[in-house]
Amino acid sequence: MIIKNLEELKNFADKFASLLKEGDVVNLIGDMGAGKTTLTGYICKYFHIDDSSSPTFAIVNIYDGDKKIYHLDLYRFDHPDDVLDIDFEEYFYPQDAITILEWAENVEGYLPNDMINLEIKKIDETSRQLIIDNDTPRGSEINEYFSN
Image 1 (tube, rainbow, N blue to C red):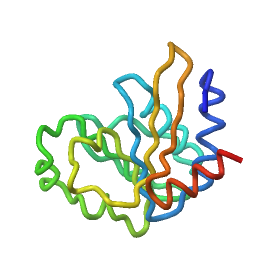
Image 2: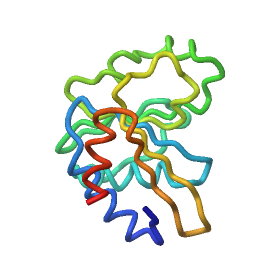
Image 3: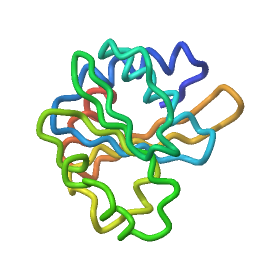
Image 4: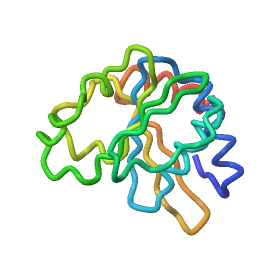
């Protein structure tokens, strides 16, 4: 699906967030500047979390709203085993929260099997292509919603 501006991205985020449930892990895939953190901010706003920011230096931000959100930025991880320095089981297999990951490819081998993979491809300064992979049951379920 093509998103042409921030308003369309917010509308997508609202629909996407409405489908999320505790225990979901969302893997945002995209180049630097693709809009991963912006999309996360809109998802947080859906859950009445107004103060979200990139956890690039903190690695993990925890937000409390209608749902608890774990937001991880794994960009600075040089080796998959670096994830052992954080409580990754709590974040990658949340019981009472939704986890949003950025740069998850940096910790392959530790990731849950049933993630929702959402790729954001930058077309130009304002347009993005969003692709929800069908390679997991939750991904298929959510992708089906957007396909109808």
